[in-house]
Length: 130
Image (cartoon, rainbow, N blue to C red; front, top):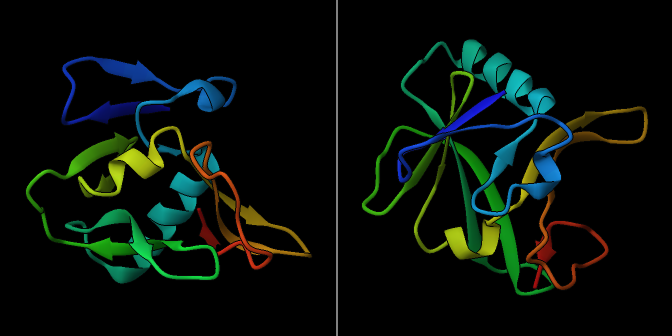
């Protein structure tokens, strides 16, 4: 998987083994990228990016938001994962550096998960952190 950020001049090659070591930006796994592509195909729009943000709220103080967005905000960090654009606003970047977004589909759970090395704790529901 190739990850390109708009804030750097180099291209980083990210493999499943290297996902855990990527500390500068959000990482989208191959499984998550496939799911995002599928959802974008269903929307029928190619101008949308997956926006990942951190907002105040939840049991632990901060919560994640993932949604499709067609806006480009001042200070956004945009990363391309094999044609899937991921955008992080400048306020969320410090909270999400090195976070790995995956998609799981098991009998017990289905959905996007975020493994964030910056989170010092989370609530039992897993939707918020601090």
